[in-house]
Image (cartoon, rainbow, N blue to C red; front, side, top):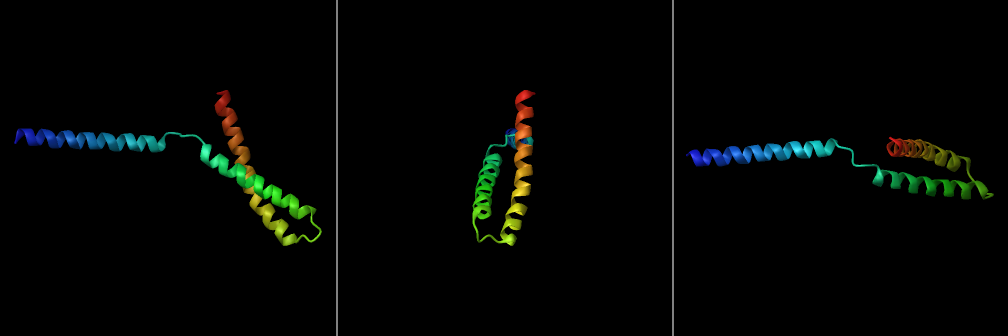
Amino acid sequence: MGLTAGVVSSSASSSSAAGVSSATSLLSPIGLGVGSVFVAAALILLLAYYDVIDASDAHDDRTRTMLGTAIAPLLVAFIAIVAYSTLGFLG
């Protein structure tokens, strides 16, 4: 009975340690690689489309407004990512 209790307590402590390590890995910073690539690619595509729409003769004001609304938050996110990366590089 003592051997079984030791195995159970050992497995319980190892599972709780695994839970703690997974929780800390969820909270630790992993970088902005995937998100920044998505933001940059989406911003480039939308800005290129905005430029094409702006240069065409048959452009719609509603389309330009929609693109401006989509570009604004991506531009803010891109500036924040660049600022965060710059501060991480300098500090």
